Length: 401
Image 1: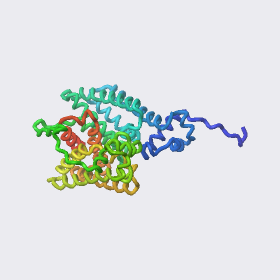
Image 2: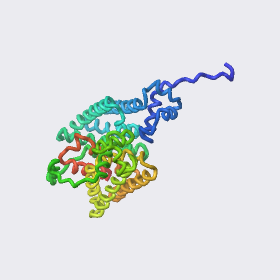
Image 3: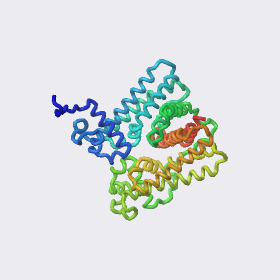
C-alpha cells in the first residue's frame, strides 16, 4: 500500500443508535417540529439519504428513541427487582437505579413527557401499554412494602415518584452526579413514604355537576384561547391550524383574525395569561403566610389550584415556549424563573444547609408532580386530588430537612 492510497471508511456498527442519539438531543433542544432529517444526519456526520437506510423518517426515529428508552427503563426495573433482599431493599435499589438512568438519559425523559404526542396512534398505544406494565411492577413491590395502601393509593404514589425522575427534563441543573442521583432517589422515596392526608382533615368540597355550575359568559377571545390551548396540548403547536382552532371554537377559521393577528399571537396570549395567574397567586399566598413553612404550604396549594383550573394553559406554557417569538419567549422564561425563585428562596430559608442547586432540583420535582398528575386521567379524578397534590408537593419540598 502506498502513502497515497486511502483506507475505505467503515460504516459504524452502531450507526442506527448514533442517529437515534443525535436525534434525541436535537429534539430535546429544539423541539420535534424544528428538527429535520438533514439536521439529524448532519449531527451524526452522514448525509440525509443515509438516514433512510435505518429509519422510514423523522417520526420513526422518535418512536425508536422512545420505545428503546422504555425498553431500557424496563430492563433497569427488572434487574433491580431481581436482586436479593426484602421488598423495601428492592424498592430502594429500584429508586437508585432509576435515578441513575434519569440523570444519564435526561434527553429521553424530556421526549417521553412532551414529544410522544407526535407519534402515530399505534406507537402511542405501545408506549402507554409498556408504561402501564412498568407501573404495575412498581405497584406490586410498593404493595409488599406498604400493604395498608389501596390500589388507587399505590397508583398515585408510583406515578408521583415517576414524576420526580421525569422532572430532570424541565431544567438544566446538574449537581455532582452522585449527589444528583442520591437527591432524586431520596425525593422519590419521600413520595413513596407519604402517609396520606389526615383522616380528620376537612373533606375536599365536591365539584358541582356541569348543570349546577353558574358560568359567566366568556368572551369570544377567551373561547378561542381555550380552544387553541386544548389543541396545542393534545397535538402540538405546529400540528394545529387556524381552521382547527376555529372549528373547535365553533367559528370559521378566518373569523379568528378579528381577535388575534395569527396563531403565534394566540400562543403568546396563552403564555402571558398563565404567567400572570402564577404571579398573582404567588403574591397572595406568600403575603398571607405566617412563616416560611406556612408560605411553602400556601404556595403549593395555590399552585395546585391554578394548575387544576388552567390545565391546558399550563401544558402549553410548559411545552411550547420554544415556539414563541424570541422577545416574548425571553420575557416568559424570565417570569417563569422568577416564580421558581420564590419557591427556592423559601425552601432554603426553611432548610438553610441545602445547596442552591439541590433546592432547585427539589422545587422542580415538586412542581412536576403537580403538572404531571393533573394531566393523568386516572389520577386527577380522585375526590381529594387538590389536597393530595399539595401535600405531596410539600412532602418533596421538606424531604431534605
